[in-house]
Length: 375
Image 1 (spheres, rainbow, N blue to C red):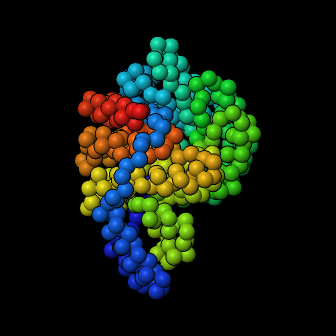
Image 2: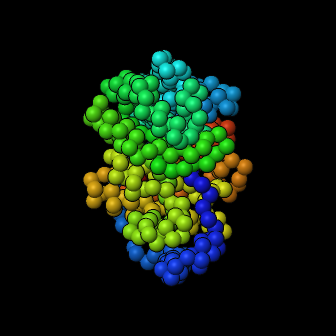
Image 3: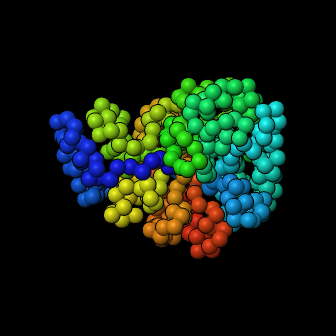
C-alpha cells in the first residue's frame, strides 16, 4: 500500500491555501461524497461471469510463522481448491549473487501445486510475480549485492546484465509450464511504498515498459499484469484521470496509479483494502468503504473494456490489518457478495497466514471464494 493519505480536513486546508479552482473542487467533492453516502437507486444488473478465484502465497509468510512452506501451501490448496494462486519469484532469493541463479524455491512451490492437481476436482494454475518489487514486506526484494534499496540505485541495477539475467531466465524457465496462467510484472511499481527498510522505491516507467515488453517477446502466450491501489473512492480516481492539474493543486492527493498501470499492461490489478492504518475516512463503516471500492472496480472495468483489457482484484482484503480489529469475518463475506456483482477477470484474496492460524478465518475465506465463483 502507499503512503498514508491526507485526512479530509487536511485536504480542505491545502485547498483553501491554493487557488479558486481548488476551492471549487472541494465543494464539488463534498457534493459527490454526499451523493455516495446516500447510495444509488439504480436496480442491480444480473451478475457478470464469475471470476477465477484464488489467493496470494509467499513462503516468507510461513518462515515468519516458523512453519513449513510446502505444508502450508498444500493445506491452503486442499482447503480452498482455488482456480489460481499467485506466487513470488523473489530476486534476492533467486539470484543470491550476480552469477548464480537458484529457482529451487519456485520449483518447490510449483511441485506442491502439481501434486494438489493430481487429485483435485478443480485444477489450480499460477500467476508468477517477477521483478525487483514483489509482494510481502518490504515490497522491494533486491539482493544485498545490488546496493541500497532506493532510487537511483534500483534503476541502475535493473539496467545491468545480472538483473536482466534473472528476469529473462525466469520467463524462459516457466513460460511452457502447464501450471502458468499469467505473469505479474513488479508489484505496485508506480507507487511509493513507505516502510523502514527501503527509500524511494518506485520503478521507473521506462524499466516497467522494458519488463512488460520483454515478457511479451519471450512469452506471447500469457498475459502480463501489473498492480496498484486507488484513491479512497472513484471520484478521486476520476479527478486524477480527467483533471490532474486541479488534483495537483491539492498536492497530488495519493490515489495510486490505476490509469498508468492499465496502459502499461494487459490487465489492471487493483489492490483494495477497506480497513487499516492507511485507509482514509475510517469514521465510515467497512460496508460503505467496500461499496466505494466496488464502484471503483466498475469504473475501471469500463475503462479497461474500452481498451480491450481486464480488471483483476489482485489483493482483496481477507484478514484484519496487523494489530487492528476493524475488519471481521462477516465483513469478508459481505465484501465477497458485493464484489461478485463487479466485472472482474480474477480475484485473489489476501491474508492466508491468518487463515492458517485461525479456523474461523479459513471458513470465511472458503465461503467468500464460493460466493465469488457462484453463478
